[in-house]
Image (cartoon, helix red, strand yellow):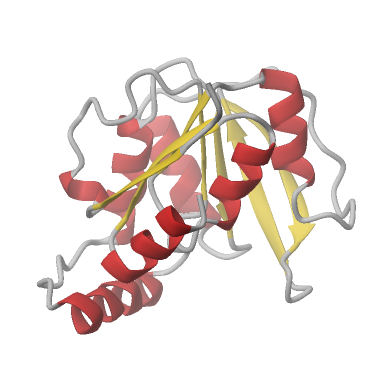
Length: 184
């Protein structure tokens, strides 16, 4: 069976507790700052009329780790500021820190990828390839089903699909979710 990208339009805070059941790995890029949360919620409201949930970033991060299957590797892309929130949420849900890697964004600015619950060796910093950690995780873990609760337009989901993994994801914005599904 060929891999698929399955995206629901939903707020992470409203996903069922078993949404990621069966997923082998979590790989995601959540909002990095509270202003980003507000911006994403406003955009979804304008494009669909959905009410703004008013989520707090700390609660979103905690929910991310609670939804990720226990014992499965978790990779979180995050900005250089505020990364403490990611580690705090991970610790608070019993996750074990493995490594962090700093890579360039497509705009050339650095960002971090935090890895938890994996025995995969760290990927060297600044490899010049923004996909280096995802590609290494795909080869090392060989997941069949990846949990991605912030699908956006689906670039990361498509990369997983190219590696032969299906993706189960969510996206708050209905327009972006439809675009991600359409590109699957």
